[in-house]
Image (cartoon, rainbow, N blue to C red; front, side, top):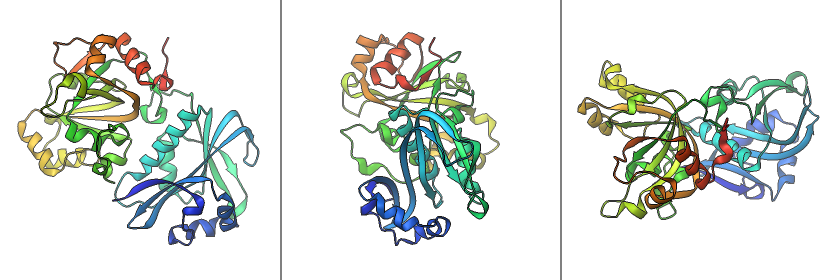
Length: 349
């Protein structure tokens, strides 16, 4: 299984072939790496071979080795970011780590320097709100600087990620069965679950998710609408204390089965970001009324909220159908505040 692991620099093998291009691109890379020692980085392995590396650093007030200089109270520098694509959405998972780190540290801006030749990495960071800002270095060593303003809301849910614009959108609760929940939303795994179920495949590594269901009314979801994910009870257990709200996502689109000309077209669309395998998707397609909800996975609630509390404290109705229903603004805000994700919300007034 491939994992992104939090490690000290001193624990990382710099002789791994993964670092050869970094040694070629950056003079003194090995000396710089050695000096980091006890500082930490995020590393991804595939059969003991490094395939992804990320180093983050907090800076303050000014960054003066780029043109133009960056001025902000608190700045997150993406110091080193390299990935080797291998058929998963691991790049998105690294972006999620960067954004989670930025949100937790309450930084004002994030920036990364990238050589022009790394077109796929540039496309990735731009997709999630990093904009071309300036340059660093000269001649063959010149890199472009891409900067993301953490308070900026554009109306594009991917560029705004992880921020959530709550103005003029609807909020819903959407249920998901336990067997699908934590492999699809790994940051939202419950403390009672076995973490070995999380595999390095596209649906766990991606910020974007596709959930397929046949529930009525989900086709009413619109771009920008917000869903609170509700992990249903384990079979044989009471929902009162085992069913739980875990995560918040923002809807990109909903496609009905009738919009696909064939199963293969449906499979090509859904399989990249879905927890379901080919036979699962064929099963749902044969039902004739399935819908594919595409959304961004903006955050896991720091405090998971059990059904009992959702009813008694948040104000949800016990006897309604809990598969999918609309939340009031007040209910949604109480869920987010209780769950400790209110720092992601924008336009609350």
